Amino acid sequence: MKIKEWLDAKEQLAYYKALELQLRNEIIEKYGDSSNLEGLEKHYESGFEIKIGKKLTRSLNEAELDTIYSELNEEEKRSIKYKPGLVAKFYKELPQDSKLHEAITIKPAQGTLEIKESVR
Image (cartoon, rainbow, N blue to C red; front, side):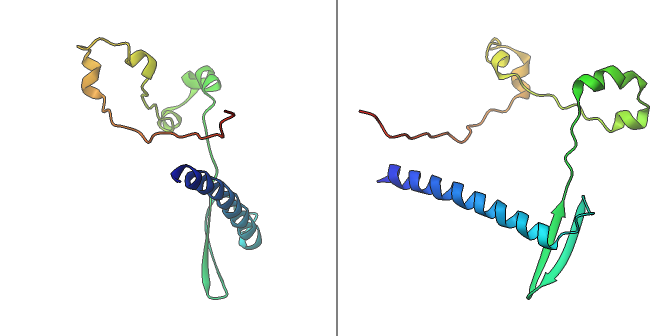
């Protein structure tokens, strides 16, 4: 039965994702240079080449940015990217003849699925 197979696959996927993350972190901890927070490291062990990539996540505090933006120099302003986004709720309310439709690409997204045992 496809439903049972899907439920089993979903459970196995969650298990293996957690296991992969745990093992990845253990390997990084064992071979990685803890003083190196960013960049690529290569290590060699038992016939394997181990590449460890480390990154730092950087995000803007938009409220803080609004208060200091006028004080930033041009070099600092070049470090900020403004990316337009679509507010679907308002877009769906636009009339058929809206000019904005010309700039929008619509394609189907992957469907979602939730299956629970029925109490019936």
